Image 1 (tube, one colour):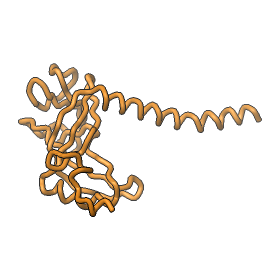
Image 2 (cartoon, helix red, strand yellow):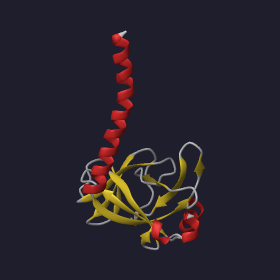
Image 3 (cartoon, rainbow, N blue to C red):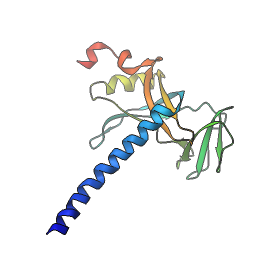
Image 4 (cartoon, rainbow, N blue to C red):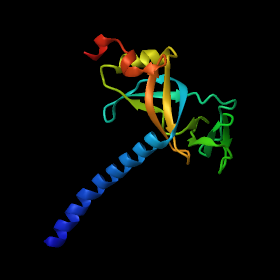
Length: 165
């Protein structure tokens, strides 16, 4: 009986421990990384399991926007912004990601969760080209979205007051 209780405790503790580790990892990137701002465009799907979120395409402002599907890729941010394939980028700041099936670069920063009431207004603003994101990038290429901006201001300051009631 004691062995079963220890197993139950272990199985309950393991997911909680994993979630805490993930939160600490993301927060370390967010607080210790270098910040870059990118314009975005996209849409707001509604997923019953994930809540309301904005899914967008990030404009990395590189000369090349297409890459080989399902291959690792990097966007060099400094000294120049270029999309490169392969391993070990030779730039001082970069974002590590993959090419999707459409040949576009993705770095797991293409989604931003928002409250349900603000989602339609933010979706409209993104469709009109008013959105951008501030991304924190670690030295090993991991990226985390720090803030979603509308017309250069944090989205919470930019939305109409009546939408948040």
